Amino acid sequence: QVQLVESGGGLVQPGGSLRLSCAASRSIFTMYAMGWYRQAPGKQRELVATITSGSSINYADSVKGRFTISRDNAKNTVYLQMNSLKPEDTAVYYCKGTVVVGLTDYWGRGTQVTVSS
Image (cartoon, rainbow, N blue to C red; front, side):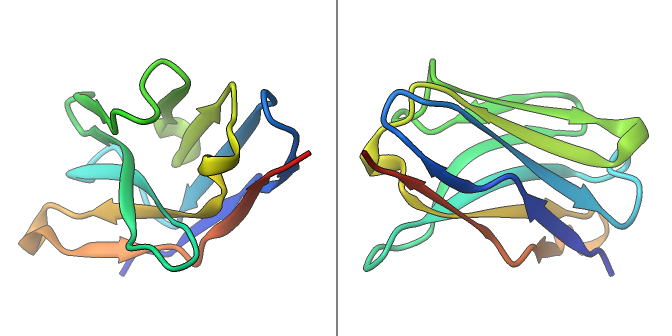
């Protein structure tokens, strides 16, 4: 079992920045991958960014150049730095961790990000 807790969401104006954090209940160093996903009202959940145990990183085209995923293995925490935020980035952001055994996914409860003037 892995518990994931997201934090850092909130209300921000267009063009602003936020940093999301995802704290894991166990070491993320041995996790197969960690990632951020988001779900806007009326839409399906979509990938935002992922980072593997080998530090391979993938971004959705819509966030490339604006968002940065990183991790601190010592703190068992994954971050999502979001810059130049747009209203269309408004969504609930979820953290996902995938363990090596069975490639089982674990999800956090999400944190709301609202971009509005």
